[in-house]
Image (cartoon, rainbow, N blue to C red):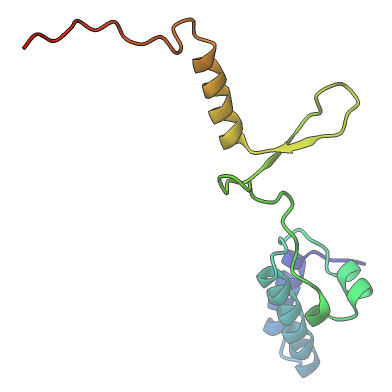
Length: 124
């Protein structure tokens, strides 16, 4: 049975309350596993057993890659949105850059875009 990192922390807490020495050894191992995975970027709902089966031990587990890398232009967190057409896969975009681009398009589509101001000549 695979448990989440949060469940491992709860089990460790319960085992530390027990006075048996074997329960304390198990609790120490559970804490070590949970803390190492949290430090490597895994969430409390991630399962431990599949990682142990794949990598053999917790110290061999690589850091969790980010789900959506940061925007290369502004550094904001990217998000997944629907595809352009039905049945297309989701796309990953930067909402900050998208909003700025839409603002630029809106400004450029204004009828007065690019027209210089009609200023009165300055008399000296």
